[in-house]
Length: 156
Image (cartoon, rainbow, N blue to C red; front, side):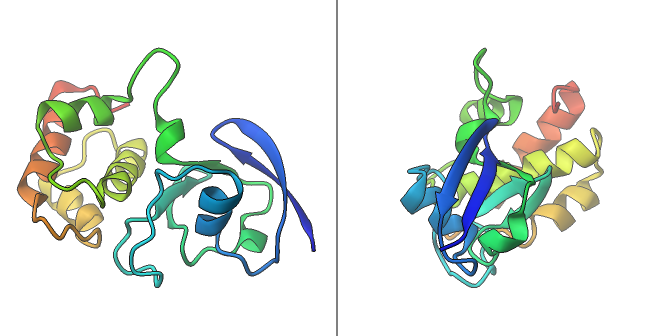
């Protein structure tokens, strides 16, 4: 089995897995980072979203062989030792989560958007978030939280 050296949440780690193993299963089963959720397994719902070199990626359809030496950030790595990421804090303040299952993917997608643009328009927010499914329907709270971060200038 091939050996892959990964940087996940700032930590270098080595895994021996099949080249076709999805990043999701490396994270959950090998590295025990279970914040990234499995849902559809086809990259459609985005519950499994992580950052690969700062880009939002669907980890259920991203092969470990395609990750290479890129840096991976999961929901567990979004916060800093000093506290929650501003997105995580606003999610709590706005009471975004209902069941919470899709929220790691929602948060990671929003974080990637705000890394690209500190002041996205409402249309840009809608476009970025439109493919992240929420069965509970908390879309208005999600968009309100992101817009509040933009208005307050605390998105970084």
